[in-house]
Image (tube, rainbow, N blue to C red; front, side, top):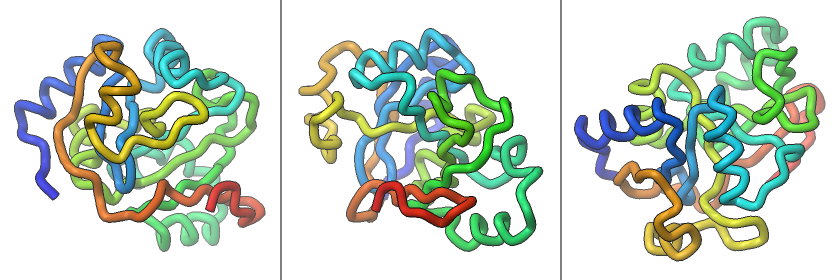
Length: 187
């Protein structure tokens, strides 16, 4: 899978710092990303997706250290469970204890987190300096985009930018599990 150039990364990070919503390839589908602490950016992303804020969003990170502010109080066996599944297409619901804004966690006391196995997304998170919102690039009810042309057909020129690259080799979007119960929320 081709990785984004330094120029592509710098442009994407500069856009994110200014409140952009950008399209990015991920492990299985194209995603939309923005700065999770930028309320107007997240609100705009939710509007584009036609997604209610109450549902919550996924935070994607380059490595476990970028999520340490959420993981530091987990039990050792829970940390081991996460480490055994990352990096990879495994998203976990972990308690946020108020460490993320409500526009990210939605109506939940947990937040969805993943350490990505997608090289381009990992580079973007590293260059950005922390986790990003990552949600499938599709309006509510529509199929997740598996090609850049599909993202364009969904959103036209409403996006602020793109991170070039290819999708990873995962067959479907990440599995979502509750860390406390092990329950599969999305297979």
